[in-house]
Amino acid sequence: MAVAPPEQRLWWKQPVGKAELIWITVAFVWGLVMFSAMIYWHFEGKQNLSNEAYRIDPEVFAANAEAMAAQYTVREDASGYPVVHPPPGSDVYLIARRWEWWPILEFEKDQSYRLHLSSLDWQHGFSLQPVNINIQVHPNYDLVLTMTPDEAGEFGIVCNEYCGIGHHQMLGKIIVVE
Ligand SMILES: [Cu+2]
Image 1 (cartoon, rainbow, N blue to C red):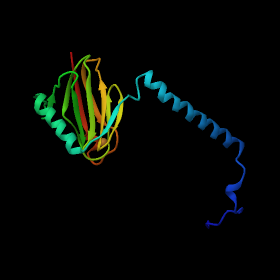
Image 2: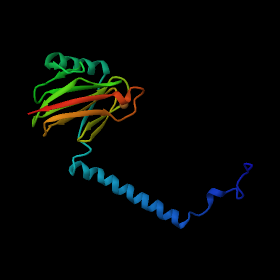
Image 3: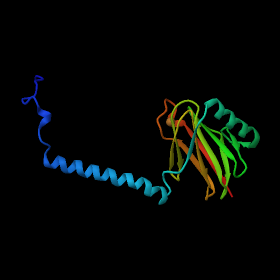
Image 4: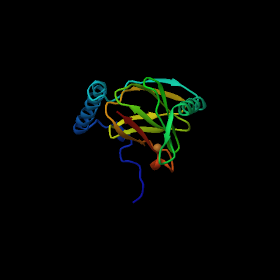
């Protein structure tokens, strides 16, 4: 089969078919519905969390996290990661970098913390399991969430933005104690 030009040169100027018009309308209206649902889900289901965002140098963010860990590390995990137990109400830093979440954080149930998230290299995705909270993590941006864990236990953090060869090993942990 040879590649030939279309029979009608102005093939793109045909009127839009009825079925196609219906589908365009359905997709457009559904887009509007889902757009409003984002606002609705903020209140109902507590998705799309309210956050604050600031510009920050990766070196400054790393220094903040290291200072916190130096002050509040309580033990070492079996994997060799420091477990940091910061005081309730304080600013808490979680580093995303290829390919780890650093350090392991330990919170107290029903206490609030200001959790700062940033990346030291490129984009990662913070996905807290099994509660399914998902946040993009960028370098140069300090994203702050006020969080109050209402359930004790161990929560996994997985990276859900593909970030290279070690992406599947990029696992972290938040521990909530009574
Ligand atoms: Cu990743």
